[in-house]
Length: 441
Image: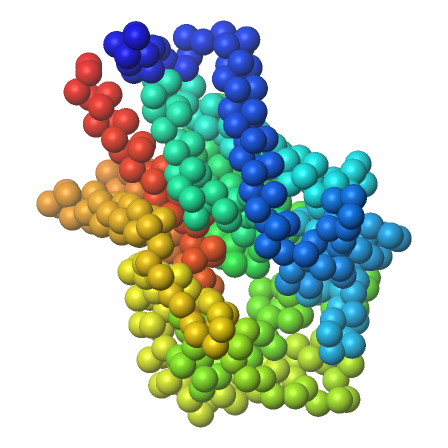
């Protein structure tokens, strides 16, 4: 039995399967997603008070101010909310996550349905992305299934299934973009373009990725120029969508550092703060003491401009301190294995070792070392034409570098890094497949 299973997994290539067989694999894996989502949701609502007596979600109890926004969208399609300081915000949260949850809730407000439906949407996107590239690379079934293993690491699974933050979406969509980059499918540019559009409207931490990855694709890819320009067009459309919404609601175009009008305030209260190093990364940065905001600040752009000025003043006076804080962030990104960003329990901060963090960091660091070696040190003599051909390594290091920039400028928590750690595992799987394929020729 084991020899038969081994033969099926290693000798059967995904291209040899008919559509019905692939559908059966999809349905079987979808069942697993449903079971995991149900179990996780049950644990989630036992820990957090988010539902009424009928297990319907109570929007205003959701985290990170998404609740009040989703409640207003659900009730009257009003994309705004009053924060806890009484300020009306239109541009404090990017739209994809809250609108998605609203649309699912319009079908049913049952918390189990929302968790399961959301998980199935993003599993389907991931499945299609991996399938497209697996067919291009003619992967065996074993390698096809291997791409799903990083999502089963407990902490990664927690981030992906959660309904608390938009990182659950980025943890699936960014690896999906990465794996699609290596497909020769005619429609890959359409898929990548759609996903770039969505992640731009999901999390401002992927801003540099969405801005520069389409340009890198134009340089590295050899397909028709018309196709290669699609990702840039998609990103421009995303910029204009959010930008014109900002103009319509507030009179100004949000972009870059002002993509969210709360950016300057959050940066001032957390990173550009003398207390930052006393809390980060072990204690939650939400616990850092905050100064009261002047009462005359009642509009979101006034708040943005006020704190932007304060941030410039802080950097002018404390630039050396800010630079000296960067190694703390880098150490956390590459070497942290403890629970981070914690709140006190009975007055004590507990930072136990998390096995998932160890696994993620091992693969993350090994993949970066391998990519650097293959890209910069393997060839004794540098030749541009050979350098550009190393698409896997260039794409990998560019995405990692661009995605880490906001985490170094600002700060990172473990959930922010999951998408990159999964990408690092994808990269190693592809390298292992290349090695495996050569030895079996």
